[in-house]
Length: 289
Image (cartoon, rainbow, N blue to C red; front, side, top):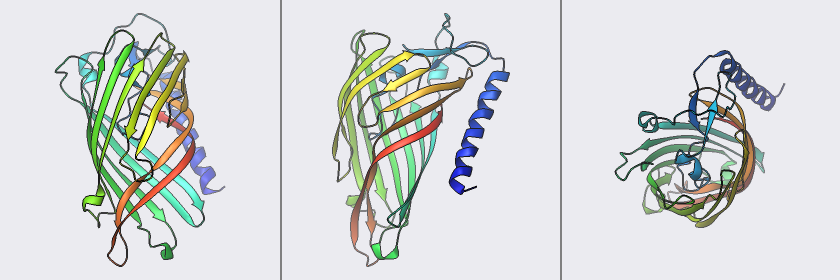
């Protein structure tokens, strides 16, 4: 059995075990958020605006299945807990170059000075490892440290607005001059005419050389509490609820979109330079929230 097949089999087995554990547990009903809002300006940050205000959620029964029952929303203590996200991406070798990325991020709600939802303080670290021929003079590791803040406000029953601002150091840690620092931001408006449809309009400043600005437009369709069709650009995704408990949900998804980044690095001769990496990605995955 190849390494790729073993990895896929291991992930599938983990999902089955988690869902089996969910089915065997006997928790009481509780209201759960559909998804966590993204914290990075080049991700699908606008796709979960409708979920973050607490107005739309999934209720699970004692078998981890969605259930429509009158259950009170999460209390303020639950909303103020920090959330962590760990992600791994690996891409097979193409033209002699293989890339792998590990990412850890944290989202901490700030005190809701103007009422809920609170501003979100975000921090993250990622490392991208490159396996390439020595003749290309590419760095082995590219690091990124980021810190930002996001704020979302309801305008009326159908409209919401969200603003984001973050700074990042993207470098091989050898070249840490001005070329390594990036400023990212985003501004969005979300229109939600009913419980099934949401429409978003906005723009992202990515800090990248190759794609400095990206439009963030599209729609989100929720035909049921178990399915979410995210048609938001630049990262559309279709998610299916696999199982859940009172504290955690497991979703499978298929998606795609634009990925990559820009980093500063130092060549072998000691000369500073910048490298941009861009791709159109198709992904099949699982997430636990």
